[in-house]
Image 1: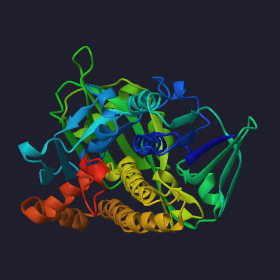
Image 2: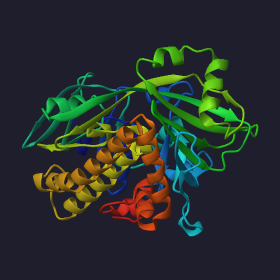
Image 3: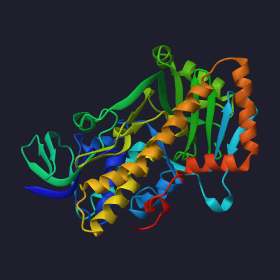
Image 4: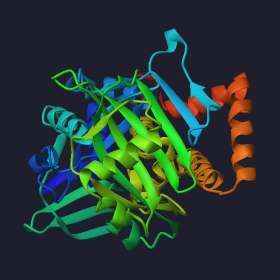
Length: 406
């Protein structure tokens, strides 16, 4: 019989990060995931890339993950937001002393770094691939029976399985959700002009068009990740375009800012939606990442919101156990719920609001948006607030997001 302080269902970017963070603080952890980890780092598994904001990056440094990512990411030096190809734009540029706003990594590189770190962390047990056949939670503890027949015992269960979390559903936690009726098309491109470490967010009535800087290729080619949002009804036709026509349409939307482009990855897509759990705890249960909340990728905050969950839950459990409490103690879960509920709601509401604001068609709406962008550009305090949000530094900041030990 295997026993751990915490059992995590889900070994993705957020679940495995949580496992490492807890184990680094002498909390025994078991992570269970049905996918073979060797497949998730293969080049063809997932063409997506993620922006890791500067505060979560400090956490990855503090728990020993960042050392496996050195030289594999691209710093985001600034973010340029514009309404279509209007010259009126909002430019987020940190002071030289503040460092990058974040770093762009291919998701498979993040998984590689997490897996390499997890293998060397004492107190962290990985059941990957493995699937939970039965899960029981009560006042006495948590019991998970794997399909192999092995039974695992713990004090706290964490649901980190993503948007369709069966753990959340089994707990009968109410979820507010809706579809944006849009699809995000994803690809990696090379372009003739350097990106200058700038992330571009171009808003069209049909949806945002984002260009996110990636490191130059080994041959010196300039690379970026493309996240192109279109109406769901138009997605099949767009994805079915011949490669040359697809590239030409992308270049048109970019206004030639990066020169000629060429696709260097298969095109993939996923539907866009919003969901927010009414609560993120239950008896001996905590939810993290997409199991708790899913937002529009408009501001690149999806995985960063999950990392903020990781930092807060780790701090709550570490401090509680030092006082002699169990990880599954109701007092600790209540503290985690209070800490994360307002922050996640505010971020979710703001990204949803931006999506709807920039999706309003018509000349009058476009004029108001452009005036607004110009006003924010000139208003230091408001611009600073947006910059702090991009860095992941709003609200009560857990110690790990400050790069501090707990």
